[in-house]
Image 1 (cartoon, rainbow, N blue to C red):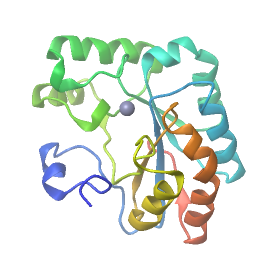
Image 2: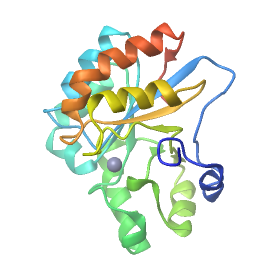
Image 3: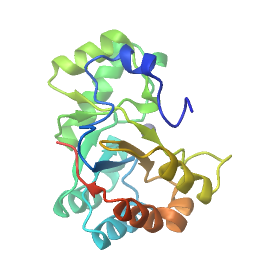
Length: 204
Ligand SMILES: [Zn+2]
């Protein structure tokens, strides 16, 4: 399926971006985008702790600015933090200068070398400049689509079961759109992954 598992041609557009980690290791990399927010992030942190799982949070700078204690807590519990711009802006609809400034604004708070473009797209010049800043651009191997109004919690769980594989970078969201679904299925998804023999690691 094109959306859940990005096609090969998409992966070629950003040749140095990371889509999937080592396919020979029984490891998955859980990522949570768009937080941190009090309605979602603390719950997710508790579930991760129950499984001793480390993950990566691609944060919106504006949210981290509003909830610095959550940014702190994510780091304190051993997870990685990534930059997801300051205002969750799409690279295609913004001038490159404004886009890069927005990334930089988020960087001042988040202090990370991991970057994920909102909506998965940015212009070539933005991509190149972000890399020149020293960022590693991280995309994904599996989008659970937990944000989608068309999917229920079970559908999201099914996406995990259908598409997770060695080295998968799996995208969830700590957002208002997804948290009800995650409350229903995140523990089960992690249990299922563990039963399949996967380890959970944060990105570096
Ligand atoms: Zn996002």
